Length: 195
Image 1 (cartoon, rainbow, N blue to C red):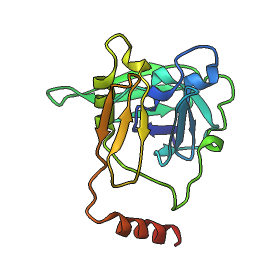
Image 2 (cartoon, rainbow, N blue to C red):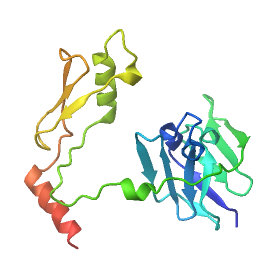
Image 3 (cartoon, rainbow, N blue to C red):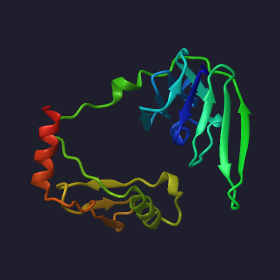
Image 4 (spheres, rainbow, N blue to C red):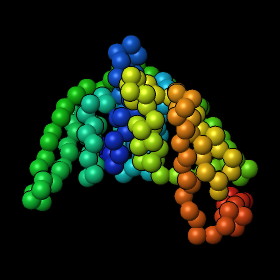
């Protein structure tokens, strides 16, 4: 059996790009189908990825991952990344990249993930809308990547107020419309958590 893990997400986007802390420049993968990446400001953890074989938890160079809808297969032994893409004609092509395991210890990422219970305020919204809003609110003289926003959340069913760096920049983000009222959804979540 091959020692591989199938990456279905461009998780490398949240890995560190600097070279001061080498361990967080990579993506941490384990044979139970977990992958994690952090740059010290944001952290992404994905579980349930398809993993085959047994291998030691490894830190894979982030550049081995390529953003693709078809996913990437990482060969842990040889640290090979095989990416399959379909061109406009539907013809599949494979790209192979090689690298070495990053030395160092990945931060204990599970320790910084906050726990929440059924009383936590949880609001769902389309992330692309937030991205577009931040771009629109960004000052012309500032870089989009440096734009800071503050979200004011009143309740899961009311609009979210977005404040930009410029106090004159204000946005309103609508929460996802639910098929049932919030009370019914809340009760449903609580009942599932208690099972």
